[in-house]
Amino acid sequence: MATDAAAIRAMFGTIATDVEANKDELCRLDGVIGDADHGIAMSLGFAAARDAAAALPDDAEPTAILNAAAKAFLNAVGASCGPLYATALMRAGAAVKGKTTLEDADVVAMVAAMAAGIRDRGKAELGNKTMYDAWAPAAQAATDAAAAGLAQAMQAAEDAARKGAEATKDMVASKGRAERLGERARGHVDPGAASAVVVIEAMRRALA
Amino acid sequence: MQSKKILNEGGDAVDEMLDGILAAHPQHLARADGSARAIVARNGPRPGKVGLVIGGGSGHEPTFVGFVGRGLADAAAIGNVFASPPPDPVLACTQAANGGAGVLYMYGNYAGDVMNFDMAAEMAAMDDIEVRTVRTTDDVASAPRGRRETRRGVAGNFFIFKAAGAACDRMLSLDEVERIARKANDRTFTMGVALAPCSLPQTRRPNFDIGGDEMEIGMGIHGEPGIARGPLKPANAIVDEMLDAILAEMAAAQGDRVAVLVNGLGSTPLMELYIMNRRVRQRLDAAGLAVHATWVGNWCTSLEMAGASVTCMHLDEELTTMLDHPCDCAMFRAG
Image (cartoon, rainbow over all chains, first blue to last red; front, side):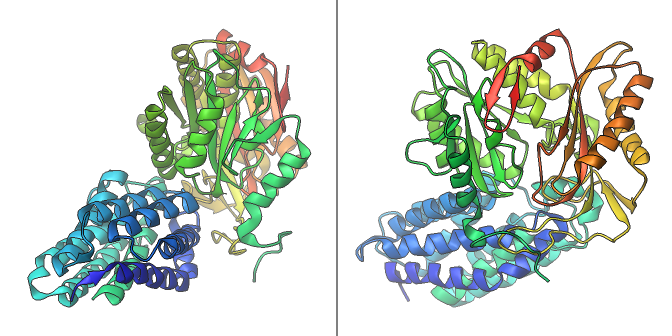
């Protein structure tokens, strides 16, 4: 099944709705080890991304939609998730540049590009207790399962993201504000990893 | 239960606050062209002067916007509550503050601020504006001494920005301004304590839980957990714990001069801050240090959080000159 520009637009609608529904829980998670605003920032960011995507003309290509969403997310939010998701979305746009419809492999490439963008912008490594601990295994799982079709690849990504987020419980943060917590961060899921699961699950539901 | 706040819509809080600030201080402040969240000093930027751009999340007022004015910061980029501003308002501030001699960015060392200001600096470079960055790291509780560069910036911003703003106003070069800003940061030490949480305008729920008889030493200005939680102690004991840490790091010699800031986080009354300052002075006297100047008040707040911090800046002749240099900002005047 090919993914067209309308599907990308709809994907931002799904992500925005799901993040909004999880906003309070994400703020609660962030309150334990951060400053309790992660749900607000994610909700504002994806609402702005959804609106920017919807405002483009019908013939806009996927890359243009992803870039507009990136810029809107960044300017609505700032914070740390602004640069991280803006970079992720711009990299996704670059990964599918020039295409009007995306094959299954293109969607998987998009997910992988998002994870790489988050890694590069945040200078994060696996095990730092950040959103990258959900995004990296998700991208890897999607890539590994790509041959089985998009539905399987995206389901594998979601499952891996969930497992990755769960594993942040046992990590001590070495990036971001939770870094200063030391051992006290142990036992709590990283809010950025938790919101990554929401985003990846929404992408699966919208695209696969 | 949601906390009680005087708000219209929580999501409009930052922009409505800025409208109110601009209405109160038209002689000091204006919005930069094309950005609602870029606030510029009316009499600050001028040709040949290094521009000083500060910024960060809202909710810390009078930090950051209150320190915009002649002799201090030329512009402040304003983020959402406790969230870094995005690159666009930082870039708008940069363009407004640019007098052709370069621009210095100064902000607290938080992951979000670092990414957004760095992106703005890359954009400014494309406009041929030379940008340097000095991140403040005065919170001694936020990382061990050996990892000073990972510490966060808190109330000590007040002294560090002041020193850098004075250096800019004295028409020093970008190299010199940067050197003085780094020295000011290296010689400024803050330690805080939190007694009760604050709540964000959009959630109106406490941003952390703490027992009715507890305090948390070293808590950050966004409610980031600190280094130790324990029973609430008397004021002198709290100050002693702070000063023990600050004096150990400052390593000042007998007769050296310091500037003192006793800062309220939002809902701790001046009465308690002055009680703290009494003990601060006793401790500094006992250590043989001379207090050059003291500020007591709400300078770097965390919405309505209860608690306070103590900051000492270890002065030398140059930093004393910078601290005494006049400035005229919307919410702070000196000299």
